[in-house]
Structure formats: C-alpha cells, structure tokens
Image 1 (cartoon, rainbow, N blue to C red):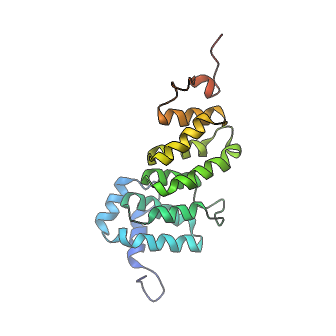
Image 2 (cartoon, rainbow, N blue to C red):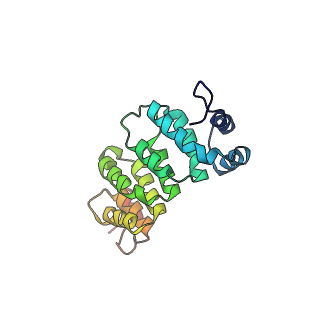
Image 3 (cartoon, helix red, strand yellow):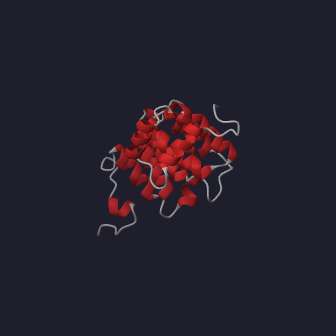
Length: 191
C-alpha cells in the first residue's frame, strides 16, 4: 500500500481525521468522499490491515464509512471480521457488523448470518437484540435464500419473539395466525 517510509498512509490518515468521532452516516460519508475521492478505492486494504492488527475500534469506524461508499469486496471483509475470534470487549460490535451486512444487501452474508442466528438465539434470550438485528438484515438482503432462513425461523421451534419478527419481516404473521401480544410475551387474549 502506498505510504510514507513509516508505513503511514497520509490519505487514509486524512480520512480518519474527516471521520472524526461519533456516528458515521451517509452525510458524513458523502463529505469524506467529496474531500478524498480516492478513499473508496483505498479503504478495503486499510480495513484488512486494521482487522489483522486487531485495531477494532478504528476498523468499525472505517467499515461504517465504507458501507456508504460501497467498495467491491467490503462484504467479505465484514464477514471475516464477524467470524474473527480476535475480537474482545472493546472490539467491533457484532450487532454493527450485522447491520452493515444488511445495509449492503450482501447475499454472501445469508449463510453466516443464518448460522449466527442459530448459534446465538439461546444466549441472546430473553431480549433477542442480536437475533432481531440478524432477522432485519436477512430481510434487507431479501434473496430467496434469506427468505428461506426467515421462514424456517417463523415456522420452526424458536421462541415466540423470534418467530414473530421473522414472520413480520416476511409479511406472513397473519397467515400463520400469530398474535403479536402473545408472541412477544404480552398479555394473551382472554378465552
């Protein structure tokens, strides 16, 4: 990667300064792209380097920027980070990676997200915050494979809240006879 003798990339350092602290949304990403048009082509290499070195805080900020720049190959890097055992408590948030993959509508994420949902639903109880994000991301991806995972959740032996959210994303909650209050743990209808 081009840079100075110390291995620092001034262009990426400029991007880092422009990102600053806080939320990296579309508006901030558009501003960075206007200031540093070549950022989109250079960001993937830096993301790989950040992941390899365990610089997860910086990785997450740059990944949030990259989602809005849509460089080819980003989903693979996010999936690699999602599967990394190197993350620690200060590392990249799994929920954020799941959101990014959904926002990218990355079809290659369907299998890994389905496995993550399967592996984590018990430990994610009783609030299912991660699993709900996975369900939303699968719905955003919207491929037949993603819909099949959602249908399996909605009609399978998962807890009510997961079944409800999957069915709702597919628009089949009425077809399945689901009652929202009952499925989400509210008061059941009087009989």
